[in-house]
Every structure is written in structure tokens, then in C-alpha cells.
Image (tube, rainbow, N blue to C red; front, top):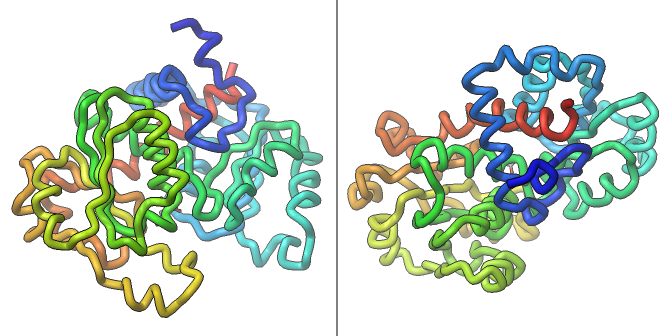
Amino acid sequence: MGEVLVSLKGADVVSSKDFTRPMVERVFEVADEALRSPERFSGSLSGKRVALLFVEPSTRTYSSFHVAARKMGADVLPLVDPEMTSLTKGESLYDTLKMIEGYGVDCIVMRHPARGAARYAADVVRVPVINAGSGSQEHPTQSLLDAYTIRRKRGSIDGLRIGFLGDLRFSRTVPSLVYTLSLFKDVTMHFIAPPALQVRPEVELHLRKRGVSYDKVEKQSEIPRVVGELDVLYVTRLQKERFPDPSEYERLKGSYRVDMELLSNARPTLGVMHPLPRVDELDPEVDGTPHAWYFEQASYGLPVRMALYHLILGG
Ligand code: NCD
């Protein structure tokens, strides 16, 4: 595959839909390299400045973008606490972005509660924008580290059966991962959730367009059988902050849980993934089993984000 086709130099990372399979594989290759020989990347971004504009809470995404930039020698401009930025004084996102751009940054990593915020930012600034979460819409860098986890644990993504369990409606990691996985061959997806939490129509539309085989599992009684057939089970918490109706959240709270009883039907090689944070949907007793991939998954946030910086800003 020619270098030109897979180049991410100067690119925005707004949606997982913008990626081709060769681009995703290029990110994996560089992430492998960052794991194998991290010293090769030290100082590779010296003289560059990265702004981290986080207008929503974050632990893993923020810290891995921060640590990755520092490891590579970039200067970091952190704008993390919405209470501390002028956005709370009524400054527009446009003005905030233009001001940050004026400080000579080479890239803006942004998390924002509004759908469309990342695309908007990419349109108004000249430097690359990396979407670190745009409301319930997408979280493309998470999908890269999620797919990378599967590829490291299983060697390949082609042909796998992946189940998504939990709040598939308001989650942003699920649509992005679905888009990324749909680039691979013969992947089958099962969306396991009550109707109120099912995957959004735009995601189904994408799957139909790409000819990916999937189904929706809405009955509690069918869950153990489906889990028994999976290679990967991707779990998400209820996205409480995005429920338009708090009584709906109360009704659905505790409606699903992954525990040893459910996993008693699973294949020995089943991997359980979770973007974290977890609340009560994933029993800590799973942590000590070989099914638990989620902490290793979180750790891949660092090499994958180093790879993204390298491909977008390096050279
Ligand atoms: C996720 C997010 O922010 O969408 N967390 C993360 O980035 N690892 C998932 C979540 O908040 O539930």
C-alpha cells in the first residue's frame, strides 16, 4: 500500500467514518513501534505545541493525550476545566478556538458535549483537530485503541463476532468502534440492549450500506446464548449525563450487568472490553479472569495516541 494513500499528515481526526482500512493499519503499525521502542519517539515533536481543550470530564483520554505529547517532547497547552475557561463567561467556541490558534499551536485535541463540535472546530481553525469526544456522536481515537486491543489480543479482526452490550444509544464509543470494525472482513455484530438503549438509526444505516451482518438482541432471555457465541463483548455504562429524561435513566439503571454467571456460558477466549469508567454494569469479580481485557485496553490509549501525533504532526 503506497504511503500517499495512508498519509494522515496534517489531517483532522473527526469521525471514524473518515478512516480507510490502510489508515487504521498504519496507526496500528506505528502504535506497535511505540510499544516496542518508545525511545524512538522521544523528542520527535519538540518545537510543536498541542492544545488540549476539554469542555467535558475526562480521565483516560485527557491523560493519555497529555502523556503522549510530553513523551514526544511537545509543549502542551491544557485548557481542561470548563469552569476555568471563558466559555463559561459566554465566550463562543469560535472565539476560544481562534484565540488558541493564535498561540501558535500545531494541533488542537478537543472534547466537547455538542454533536458536531469537532467538525465545526476543524472547519474554523487551520491546524489539525483531533476529536476526543463530540457529545454522543463519536469518539474516533477511542475506536482506534479499541480496535488495536482486539488486533493485539486476537492477532486479527477479520471474521470475529463482536457483541455490544449496554447503552448503545447515547454512547459515542460504540458508533465509532462500529465504523472502524466495519472496515474489516466478515465481522458480525450483535447489539445487546433493551429497545430504549439500542444502537441509533445512523449506525444501522452505515452497517447496511457496508453490507455488515448484524442483529439486535433485545430479550433478556437471549443474552446468555448470544454471549456464548462471541469473541469480544464490548460493554458500556449508561450515559447518565445524556439522558433527556432523568426518569428514563432511573427506569433503565441496573437493567444489565456482566458478571461471572453471564460469563459461565462464554468461550474461554472471550474478551470483555469497556471504554471505562464503569459504574455497576461490569462486576469487579471479572477483573481477575482472562476475559478482562479492559485495563490492557486502556493502556493502549498511550501508544495509539502517540501514533496519531506521529502520523499527523511528525516528520
Ligand atoms: C468514554 C467516553 O468519554 O465516551 N470514556 C473514555 O473516553 N474512555 C466512555 C464513557 O464515558 O462512558
